[in-house]
Image 1 (tube, rainbow, N blue to C red):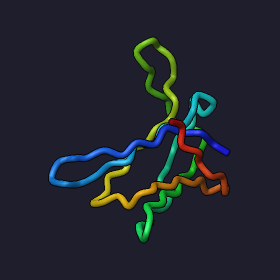
Image 2 (cartoon, rainbow, N blue to C red; image 1 turned 180 degrees about the vertical axis):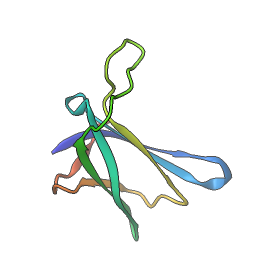
Image 3 (cartoon, rainbow, N blue to C red; image 1 turned 45 degrees about the vertical axis):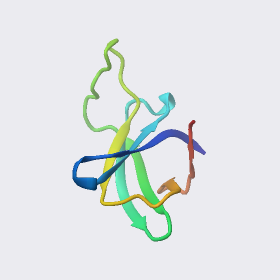
Image 4 (tube, rainbow, N blue to C red; image 1 turned 90 degrees about the vertical axis):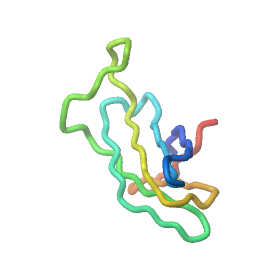
Length: 93
């Protein structure tokens, strides 16, 4: 099971955003969005891959843990995030 920070926020004009940041053990990896479905809940499927390019450094000069922001018209709580490998992403509080 992967652990990630998952946060929802409001954007301009009523749109929403989901920010997904994986844990430190995924430094140097990339996150790709494979699918987003919104029926009764919002479900996001991500794929974690090896990075093909040099990663940006954080303020202290270290490689950041991977993150992605997903823009949506609406969010149907609860938000669930799963990986293509079948791993459920546990929300870090």
